[in-house]
Length: 318
Image (cartoon, rainbow, N blue to C red):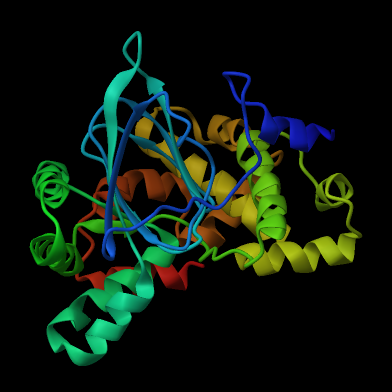
């Protein structure tokens, strides 16, 4: 077993399965799920369905595509089809919690087909398009919980009506941000998807350390040129750009949440050269790290203008 496979297969509880597609049975097109923590559902995975995910207990770290962030109760995220994601709790009561996650999963084809015939449904289509990056909503946790409780308690037309009402609210809000810097819809076959996820998991767990494309190519048994094509198809970025963006995402969190000096943030997220860190940060975010910290509340507080304008601003930085 390679070191990368070991990192992926072995979890803190000693039982870790290979990456896999998560599939569920459906009663209609709207599927409600929930689970506590710890849970076998807590793993780096993706699935064909959209997922609206609300955290109601515990705090920890989330991974959505190439994004690493923090979560706490009230955290609400919409992920698109085959966008890898995971929530790992780090602040948990002794014995765990019975209910951590309230989740709604739904497929694309039925909604897209219905929207062609029902104009009122078309307002949610831009939201579904944005979800390929992962969408985090702000200030909607309590309201989301009430909607999800009603979805849980209903079936058939009543459940669908509740779902559409809530999705309409999410589509109209300006209080959101996009998470992943790349739209990461993965390969279709499970074997290749497992290989993609093993690589991404290794990077997200070891981004502070020196990592090279040559090393990862050897780990998965590919030539460097084949690995480069494989990685770009999976993430939409070259390996170098992906790693830089991942490190810069983490740097943004440290700049917002701590008083560390910029030079300390640089080395803490894996950059080995301050000048290179400042240059890459400016390329990705459009401002220097110091300016980002000064503007952080205004730029990343979730109130960034109308949804399309915010999406365009994020897209321009990709």
